[in-house]
Image (cartoon, rainbow, N blue to C red; front, top):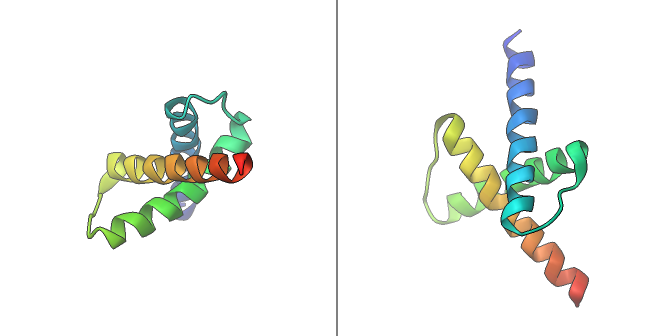
Length: 84
């Protein structure tokens, strides 16, 4: 039961982080599944970047911030690659 609850929170945080990143980067969003994917990949990137900077984020808000920062970086890189 706890793993199901964790998976649901993981998807919710991923979706919210992807949505927020789309708004921060002045995009139009990617739909529910696209936002979740951007948020999940963003969480991985954000965790890596926070680790490089010796930063730690805890709890629900910390996870959301980490995933959103990573998703913004991901969208920025993708836009640079698309325009090149």
